[in-house]
Length: 302
Image 1: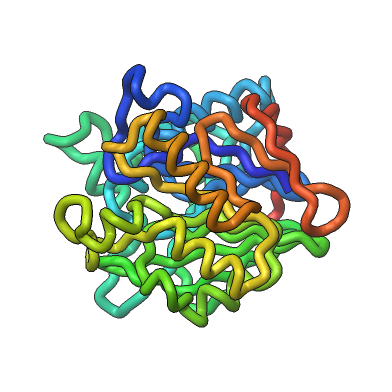
Image 2: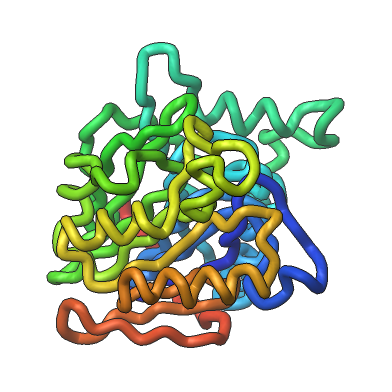
């Protein structure tokens, strides 16, 4: 499996020199597994991913699977700028878990943000084949040889964490979640059990979360590196990757946070735009590179 980070920032995009090294785009993570392209969330980072997919395909077709953690704006706002969705002959499968009977449908939410007066063209202008899949809690998804499971996490309006499994490897994408930093949620621990990589929302420092530095962030739906380390230790995770960085945390702040987090758990990295994690031949071995990926695309029969 190959994990590529296209957007790592939370809440709102933060372009500028102060965030150049870690990146300012909102969440989008691509996972290439056994020839299939899996995308997690459609923040502003998905625009760059779309450009890479179009370049990699040449005159060929792009087939990708887009999995949403939830439908807050910073996780959907890049969708209208995902280039492959406008190309006839391409296919995009969109997956969403309805966490309650009153939960919105993903197609309706994506369509609503592409209506005047907030956007000039509608969802119908997208020329690719768009297939929307609404899942029930606990429903398992198979894309080619990959198996995907999910678990609900605590976040306003609902959210799920995703696990991708293939040939003894596993990665977990767990963003926009909150829990007592000392008490890992059992469902998340089980989802992350023995994962090679846990991508985890560590938006706040422990002091920010507790209200020691500014107002308390308790109840805001996000976590800390201490909470991530606790989940990783309880689940036997091999590599923890901190994600969903606060828009006020510039590159210097993130450098200091990274050093502090590694003192808490040595096997910790901090997500940056353009970072690639390639899993080794045996579970637990991971290599982190700095360059953007060259993504190979294969057709996926449904």
